[in-house]
Length: 385
Image 1 (tube, rainbow, N blue to C red):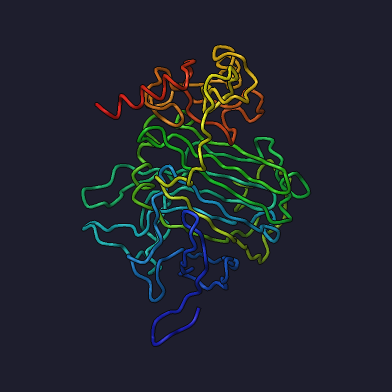
Image 2: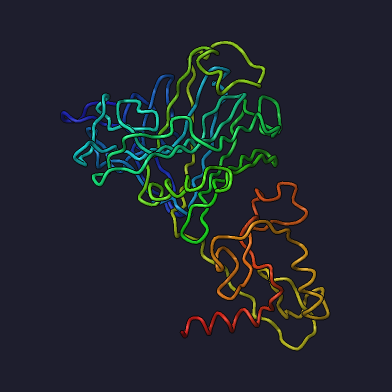
């Protein structure tokens, strides 16, 4: 951080938004970020912003993440027991009683669910971690005033996701070896227009550890009270703190680690954001060859491709639907992959996937054995109404 013509000059980094390169600034605090890497010193806290210069309530990078995702690589190798390397979202800037951006006690417009800096706001802790522990926690707030001011928030959070307590393969020398850089993907899944699930997937050298927090894992209405903040946009925040085991035992308990934090740096790189509503460009759809008598599974139904493994549509449908296990009903009849003509849309996952409902291929699918032709013409009819 330097002074440039009387204004603060913060470092910029390159991220991706919906696959396209984007420049953002790492503002607040003293950090040595650059290229595609965010580097935060111990006791540092910084934010992603859309411009450089002096701190202001209008400068933060706040994409719509409802139905979207964020991915990044992280190096926690210096963050031992009693450290907390945090990557999270807060609804900055917080609002004062009159609805104006509140600069908070630090002058950086920070707010969170524990009123650090004197201002409350919604908080989603994507990563509070060190080499031994990982926790993900959503924190909601009571309904704000008509000016957008929050009077109280849930400082403890609900639906805590502790990778180390869940028996997942995370830690020094394990499948996700925290002494080396690994990849993180967080999805903010929605069902209809509701926030339905936070899904976290860690990957490294072919190893995967994943878990999720669903709407049913928290009190009724909890996710609904967070949804609006995600949709309006929340500020990406990176902090690096911690001192002794007693300070951080809420995170490190059950890990068996001990000792003080020391003076670590954390490195987060290759940030990639998929905004709500964005989707990858679909590839070309193969043209079915009619009349061949060979059927293949396709998008939860069956298609007469000429090169499938099934001699009839009925046998194909039986094989296709049996390859998925189904859970609770999705919020809407056309959520996910269900289409516009499904009468029984439910959360599903590959039946042979040990991750079950938290599988990377989990989605809303139609439980009914409806043929592709029926789905196609029903969808066409719906668009003509």
